[in-house]
Length: 133
Image 1 (cartoon, rainbow, N blue to C red):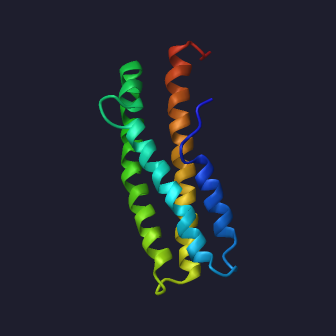
Image 2: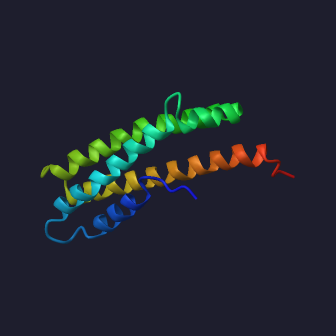
């Protein structure tokens, strides 16, 4: 089974987020946000472009173009959310409550993106392998 380069970092980020009442919480959140950003950058590198997984998927199952386009569009939104959260965590003008909300939204978006990608792969290979009724 192939794991996502962001799966473990998001789990660690979620734990850091849960410790929001502790001293130096924001500093720890920034530290744990770094690997999530790096992992997501790697995910985008692996999936997009002419040699990426999405191009390969479309060669195998061109009918999934709409789903691939949705995933690519989500990449841009998630990259923007990661940057916004990085800024919010580092800003004393943003409340802890706002940071928790932004981080929670980001983690949900990442989870949704991971599930959509897995569903798209299942759809591609389930139909191609004759797994339907």
